[in-house]
Image (cartoon, rainbow, N blue to C red):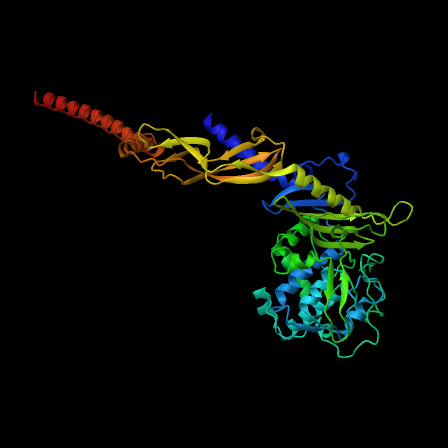
Length: 528
């Protein structure tokens, strides 16, 4: 019976682990949208993560690949940061190709001019705060140029050895800075003050004569874009693919909300990122071609005033991060907030940009995000679900004197985000331990794991350790080993063979003696 209980426990644990990622409805906690004034969700996909415990607290269709628009720039920030060693002192000249290739795309722009000299640090601000496609493309072309010149070592060593850095590449002609200056600056258009970003279809039948023959949505030949995809794979993203650094629509340019959260979580560990993404108004320094100017953010959650649509989207605990909008993607945002000591990120994708009558819709992606933030900070809290030293189960103990059970305790504390209303009795503990353990055992020795779940979702896994040290009884060990030997199949087979041989021997002896007696009788008769 004990064996069957262990097998059932192990099977239940396996099913819990497998079920969590498969069922979006069972992942995270329940938020009652009907009770919220926002009456959402309005987005096609939502994913909310508590960064303090790495707990998924809410999901809605989190794994569908969707157009991500300018949220792309979060990954662009990562690759730019990891490719440019000295952001504050690296001066980059904006090439003519940036203006040419974005011509007619309706891009949101930071207003950089051809021939303008800007630090990489400034370009990151111009890319993330006003969502400048021109800044993103400038960073990509600079990194591509440095790679083509052999000044950047490809992190993928196998590819670096297979492809010499000095070889001619498809992106090299585009990545060379151009000395000619534009007579007119690129016009500044931001997501906050102009129409959303338009796009190319990326289907290969467009006329790209105005953009110098370059599809402005597809830079898959670029080293920079290759690194974007490699980094996504490194971060465990399985529903993401990049074709450009800015987010203009291409059918092969997409991400899931879960993947975007993983990318953002990593980006938040990099220097400058949270500072830049939380900036509401950036003062662009004076350059060789422009005076000092102030540029505002596209993130309405950071702005405490009524927008042009008559709505104040402000959320006082919001700290960033990046918006996006395209006809194909709808309104999108990756947002972060810190309140009451907890930090959350929410990825919202696919909110409608237009109402049924064709009028511009409210930014319901921001309303959805604000609702989730308010719910999380008021309804969720950190709960300790396992305390180091707590006895959670016991297992059979062998070779110990006058002791046949060993208690197992939690090897560490486990704290997770849970609804405030959840009681400790609602936590289900499933253990994965061996059927028995042999003495000697040292206190603290890890002997299994305990899987803690709530509402069919695994919330924590803690090691199970011996609660005490137990010495080995040599007498009992010898006796048990002797019993084991005497009852082992091999011993029984050998014993059976020996018995059979003895029986055969006895039979042969009996027959031999009978034969000898007969021979003696025959001799007596002859002697008579």
